[in-house]
Structures are given as C-alpha cells and as structure tokens.
Length: 324
Ligand code: G3H
Ligand code: 13P
Ligand code: NA
Ligand code: ZN
Image (cartoon, rainbow, N blue to C red; front, side):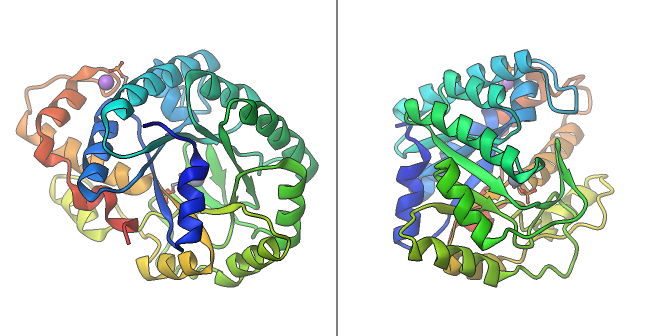
C-alpha cells in the first residue's frame, strides 16, 4: 500500500520513535529496501532526490538536473514503487528529497509521489515561506504531505552545499509552520550532509527540545526531521578500502546522539550517505568478481549484477543506523 507521510510520522510522534527515511537511485535499491523492511515488519519511507530522479530519467548534469529528466525519472520511479507497493506486506511512502523548485515538486506530485520536500532554506525567509506555501497549496489538493526546511544544514549532498550551518530558530519555526501549513519540518541542530561530518559531532538537543515545546504549547502537530544523519559505519569504509578504495576522513553521527534526539522530538531520520557507502562497497566487490564486464552505471549492467548477487546487498549496512 502506498500512503502519504502523515500516517507514518503521526504514529512515530505518538509512540516516540523516528521513522528512517532512505534515499534510492535505482530499482534495485527499491527492491532491497522493501525486502529488508518486510523482513523487519517496518513501514518504509523511500526518498528520491531531485538529482536522483534526473539520473533515473536519463542523465544528471551534476548540478540540479534538467526538469525533463527529473519528470521522466519521477514517473519511472513512482510507477515502479506503486507496482511494488501493491504487493508489499508493509505500507510505503514515496517522498521527494530536497526539491528546490515548485516545478520539481509538482512533477513528483503529478507522477504519484505521496510526499514531497520543498527546500527553500537557501532563500530569504519570506521567499522560503512563499515558495513552501505554494507547494503546500498544490500538494494538499492531492493528499500529498509536505516537508519544509528552515535553517542551514552544513555539508554536501548533490546540489545541497552549505559550508556553515545556522541553527533553526524556534520562534521562526512556529511562524514558518503557521504561514505555510507544512506537515513536517527539517531543522538544523548540528547534523551535516555527506560522509565527512567530522569526528566530534555534538548535536544541539536544546534546539530540538525548544522547537518541540513551542509547537506543543501552541497545539501544533508537525513532525521534526533530522537530515544529514548517516552514522557512516567505519567497517564499511574499511571494506571499501580493502577492495581498492581510498576513502578518507569519514565521520558520521553517533547513534547514541540520534537516540537522544528522538527522545527530544525528532520523528524522521534521513539516510543517504550510508546507502552510498554500501553501494560503493558492493560495486567494488562486483567489479572485482567480474573484471571482464564493461558497464555504465546509468544502464542495466552493474545494477543487474547487483540484483543477481542479492547476498551482496548487506542488510546491516542498509538499515542498521535507525532501526531502534
Ligand atoms: O528506478 C529506476 C531505474 O533505475 C530506471 O533505470 O530505466 O536504466 O533501468 P533504467
Ligand atoms: P546523509 O548525508 O547523512 O546520509 O543525509 C541524508 C539526507 O539528509 C538526505 O536528505
Ligand atoms: Na534499472
Ligand atoms: Zn537532506
């Protein structure tokens, strides 16, 4: 069953846990995610990013993707996930991650995504409000939930690059939610995108608590989202390097801190880099086992090998960070 974000996140809020949200770029990753969530009997929050959709749709220009490719990719991914969701034993949401424009969010809603993020955090506050509200007004007509972002999350992820973070202001969060009507809000409290988060991460739990308290005192039921939350397991980095990689300076968010953040009010935890690490490891292993294969990651070749070698999709790497 394909459902929107609220059903997941309201339950997470009520029972004080966080829903893991996982980025995918290929059908094989969708299959792996479904397989593992079914085994764990956990609901699945799948995310396709703007650039991920462009990649699936044809070609990524390694900036923000071209709208035609994004539309094509969103259609392919939404059709694929909808078919899988009909027979899956768990509920699934398909969410756009870091949509940067109204047109990209609209393309995903029109394709059948059940949830979208509009990330206007790089804009001036009033422009972020205006853009986000426009997406909410469109999305809610179709029962699609919307995640906004306020504050700047540091680090690099596709198109999203910010050198320094600026934490989310609790009062501004309240104003933003009142003005836009978003269903969930990505906040900046010390997490960072990418595989190099540093080695001394200290999440600012008071920010999560303060935002949650203000919202609760106003009777506002909006879910708080933690981006840049990969734990960057060092055993996978080691496996990559043992397979010929040279990945250095990596660091992730300690799982203990994520657990505290969940207690303070985080209801959704975004994971992309951990999956990229697992995928990198698997590509390297398959390349080593099949040195004769000439392939291109955007076509069937290596993904087919990946699918045929199911055992190489390592469930530890795929879900470990946020399952409890
Ligand atoms: O889910 C999307 C697939 O990765 C689409 O790619 O058409 O090259 O198989 P493909
Ligand atoms: P990571 O880079 O920590 O995996 O963050 C993922 C994310 O925030 C996706 O939106
Ligand atoms: Na494919
Ligand atoms: Zn993010």
